[in-house]
Image (cartoon, rainbow, N blue to C red; front, side):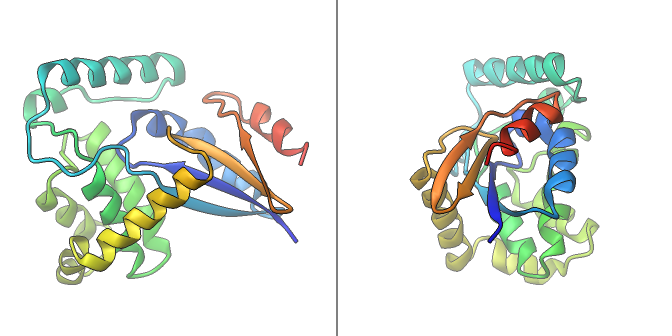
Length: 203
């Protein structure tokens, strides 16, 4: 029986964006020997309130730090063009709603949200933005819109968040290996794939 690598993330987590290049390499490197499971972590609950100045500064500083550490690109025009809200649950639910139209849309939606947010200065906290992104990747917009805020989708997100918490994850991105019924946390390295693979070789 193969071990399972559990990846816990949030589409609007800047460190997840910084990890994306290595994450793709990691999944490709282990796909033949490990099962892969992705869980949405739900970084910030629903909110209609504009992001306070102190939080804006904190998040912008995080972007700058991720850029320094990982070399990932960020479009800081977002902070002038959009009205930020500390609310990532809508984008998490968008991934679930996309997934319902085919498993391939899971990765496509995550990637599209990240690109829109970090490179195109678009706001994935807005439902209208998420619907536009869904259509752009080929989803049925009406079906997606109906699913996005449904009670079922809301509960699925809460279930994934609860599962992530139950395995000891409260920050993103996180990697956990399920090995013969045991859970072992793996240290994330944002620039060195080999450092992660060496940890996995011990399982």
